[in-house]
Image 1 (cartoon, rainbow over the protein chains, first blue to last red):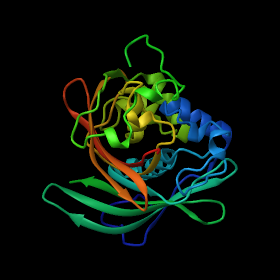
Image 2: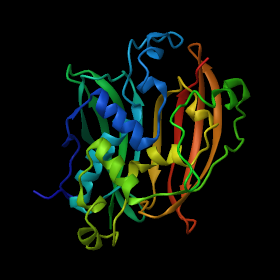
Image 3: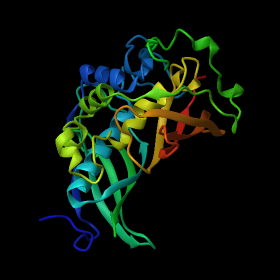
Length: 144
Length: 158
């Protein structure tokens, strides 16, 4: 069934794509984003401590989570004629090579303003152990 | 990044030129450089996150959509953040940890857009012994239209 603003209700689920994280996927994201921070590349560097934090090895870019959530939102919005307007995310747990992550969204509420109709969506990314690695909120516009 | 200038992938190389937390002045603009967004760069970014929607790849399909042509995914600002800043920008400091970001999208970026960034640190603070800086960014296309705007919270290396 085609998603429409009228038929959406709080609690509706949006399933995002599963994503297998590997050293190669992280390296590809470095090349695509131009973010070559050694956090994502340098095993020796990552043996150290970062203040109170010890990662123990290279980690995936937090913004890779962001890109996956955004992909989920646009793939859901485009067929409905809707527009991805906002995404806010927080990283709550590092993601490492060997993890498999998956974003999901839950429709939180709808609101109508002067010129548009809005859907607010809670988003999260979980790993293979069902642990939250990222959380946030998205806004999608359904033009009048 | 100036045309023909290779992107420096060794983030240690200019580390001594970058501002540390103590030097960063909230409100002061960051140096930025215009960047021409190519179709190849969009396609590489799409591949890195598995984007496969034809609106990013198939020109004939894209012409039938509300956008009238190929566009980049909204999250292309992830690439633009590094392509529109010079090698001594403090966002490249090794050990910079991204704690979260929020972005609002106005119009999509498109292949061959010449992108301009206005950016600054907006705030800095200490929380649980960690040194935070909030950065504030707006990307424009060659027509002066806002593509997107966003903020990020980073933990700075000590």
